[in-house]
Image (cartoon, rainbow, N blue to C red):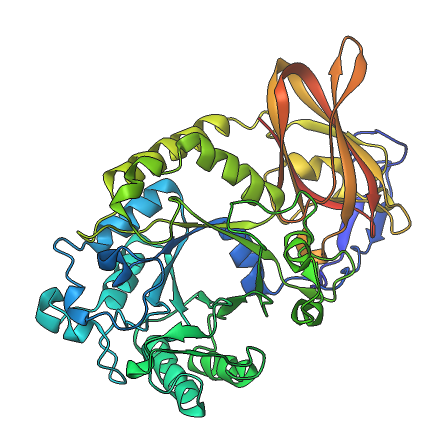
Length: 492
């Protein structure tokens, strides 16, 4: 998005000069860098800033001990004894999540709301004598605790007799209409690539295949959803977007090289290495479709008592944070409620201790308001000076002249102290630019290289192998697609 304001600033000349104004400097108008297309939409920007969202998988599978229900499960088995959606959302909020995505309907077709279009729903379960509505309870809990609400509706339905026929697409759209009319607003709609295969299909018990590219008529389906909720903008996740892409794995990491840009026509080509492409994105991609890192706190996506001893440790969750949020993606961590309808104590404890680790490791930004020098800055105008990277304002940034695609920032920490993490952020309103960079620290009267990396994007966190005592950190942008635009530098 092009910045409309014209900066009026005092000119500063010479490399590594401070940028304080004085009476003998001339006023200079310097235009901001032009956006490097593609750039994120406002809704995508807000999504990046959420950083961590939670997935909730909960349905008949929770009671059958399955990951994928066949579609012939009786609604009578869905009977959580202590379901407390507020406990779910409260737990997730305390852990630092900003949004929740609920599996309103998984592949088995069981609807967690009293859909008028099917009998395979919570309305025919013992839960609250058929008067329950899990989607409503979670949506209301999200509003109460200030988290955004998202939905997952599986396009595949192993219960429906007409799956594979045009009438099923109408059924799927009717259910979307129920969700978006009665439970919104929704910040993200999630649908995956599990489409077609064996199932109950109303008693047929057979395998059905569909053309994944054409059967659902996704353009018209998504256009219908946008008509139901024009504002706030719904973000659509799938393997190929159109707004958010799959990361290519379910292990909790995105590639160290992570471009938010990709050409989604290539994602349908079925070429070898598609998972790698999803993880790296494409430097020359023509659309902004960032990767979302989806992973479960347990080995499975639904609760299984046998996995109570296999909940990811706080240390593992911290590593996942560094390889997802710390590589410029948004984390989507699945936390499945148990048969009681509660997030299990083991999961709650792991989340709580993980939050404590995050708060401890990133408690004090050593670079906050620190003095910064740069080898050059755009037009020698203070509006683009090095000090912008430590001023705590995400809308200000250091930038170079258009023809300059490298640069050096030197952060003075004021005194020698241990450094463990270096955090960088680009001003992605103007696009993702940096291709490679390095980090050095000042030791024994010399610069010592400690890290090399590739992309930055919304956020990049580098963990040093060992804490290093230093009073200065140097960041060298070694290559970029266009003039670097760095909004933030933090040191911990």
